[in-house]
Image (cartoon, each protein chain N blue to C red):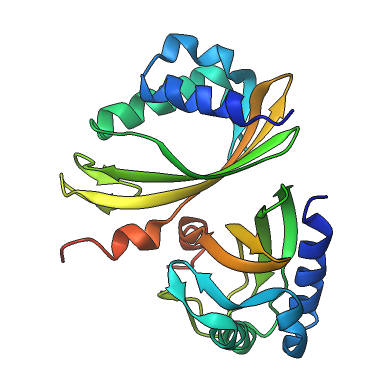
Length: 127
Length: 127
């Protein structure tokens, strides 16, 4: 059985902002882009995202799954309130994608490799 | 059967720069990041990459496959000769990743969604 259903439940959880349920989906010692942030760091990261992007919503556009890993192309249409990834957005509506890999262990996300399409955002910024 | 072996043969082909064999792996009407470039456009894009990055080599770090799609995290360690993705590299050695999805049709790559980690490159640039 692949991990697709598990992953879609994770996305529903973070869209519902139910961070108290994050440990159902994320391993205690999770590593994110090479940094051992642990589940507390992961929760803090998401809370920071919710703060910086009040209308943040994760939409799965593509999903490839096997028995131990997920790759997901996520779509965002949102209005970051100020700076985002070093870019001054200041409330402008932007669309962008994230191509992200997740390695699972014991049914939970253990390692994440995320790339945001920064060039896609830059093309939309009002000069 | 998943598409992993087919994909690894594609990567071997483009690392060998055998662009005359590209039609073994890429569909004639391939779409790349939403643009209908076709196999001629795809071949031109790769030829341009070889020209701009003489030591270009594709290394598969992660691979997730199902019966109709591939997701691959590619690693590059290379010296682009001049500008690359709007950044002035000018022969500096850089490392970066690309998280890329491929939809297959009839055993060939029919659609590609690629994201380059531009922020990763920016962090390495000598000011």
